[in-house]
Amino acid sequence: MWLDLINFLNKFIKESTRKNLIYASRKLPCNISIFVGVIYNDGGDPILKVWFQYGETAAYNHETPKRIKYGVGLFCEVIL
Image (cartoon, rainbow, N blue to C red; front, side, top):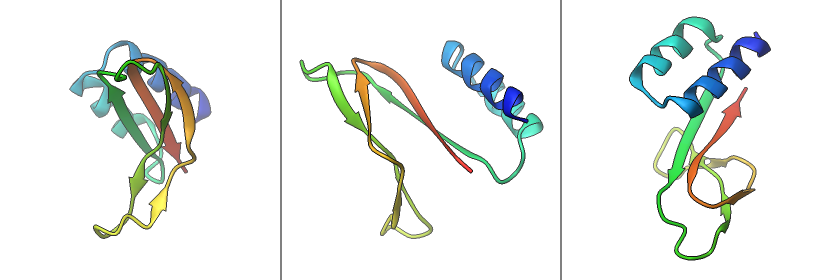
């Protein structure tokens, strides 16, 4: 299972396409969520703090840990 997850994330970051999302739905257990975000412009400050907020309502009563990201590009978080 974990090898499938690592391989999926590596492939997803290299080739962010709909095809990868279909692969994930077939290979990963149902109780895993993968959030993927992208920074297009860092506003001149390449050291960024990133996280995701989520929940069942617009109140977004959950959030992922805050992490440091350097520069533009993809970032992701896995929720088990």
